[in-house]
Length: 390
Image (cartoon, rainbow, N blue to C red; front, side):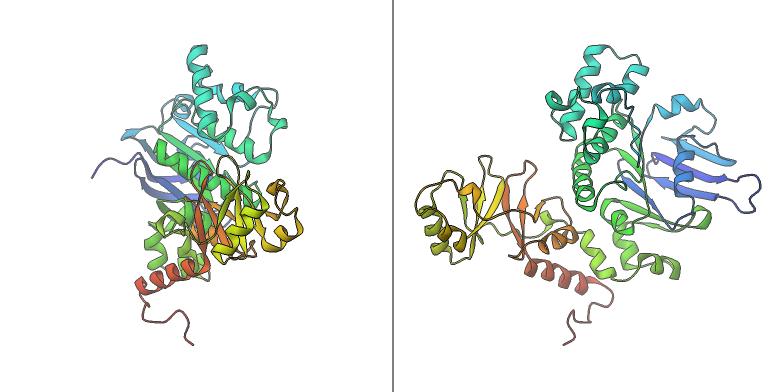
């Protein structure tokens, strides 16, 4: 078996005046290139464990190994330069531009300006921010979700082998959080970092993690395994209780839109330059109640119904002002659980699926989700129990 990227050997933290240990002799091996989630109830020591890995908090006892090297007592500043760090509050320097924020560690490492600027632009592209628009802005001029992306870019600036993330998406609204999670998983496909990720949200853990460590008080490991294994075989009553109700539905976080068959011809589409008469002909031919208007980059723009077309100028005119804006839109990396939630926003009962560039890729409906649930149910230990007993 290959050496893990990170190994914790009986790592312990005790604070003066406290009877119990904040972290009690935790043993964990974290494989190279995987996202390892630390999850558990409040006060279980998740963040303390994370901060001991890069020695923001010094352990009372035990050892930390990085790529087989004992780094428990090496210079902590040198150690931290080998680890990117992202926190919930992001921690961007308000008086520095976005480019200067991202360049923090490269400057400390003595990179020249040409190399640093190229890396800043590369990372802004990677996190979906146009360098020409954002590199000279200040944090206060950006949204919370954009600042979070910059925080991730800054953590990756010197290309560290390890990233530590403490509730990185916790301060964002649910829609932004879902999109940031999907974007980060897309980035991880390209960069393949070893990531230790703290969250209190078991659904986020299931979605994001290659492995999950469910921690009890004192960071004692109640179960450490893949999301599939934990959901299929909880190791204890504590784990089962922490997972909560609806385990079968939580398994929807294990499957992604790209894993199921996306319908490509179920709903008619039309481009922005088409006329109302062409749109009506499309609708009549399809037998559907609505069609999907695509913009010049084939991105979903609006749902337009027959009634909208009847109210519009008969033959000519811009279709972009008709109908309603597309709300339920998911990319191929979204989980089926995320897609199901998006469907509830759409009166048509479908989610519009887009590719990595945001171009239209098809639709996903409730029947497809139900079929996936049935397959999961059939594969579970109690698979002989029908989904609908009636």
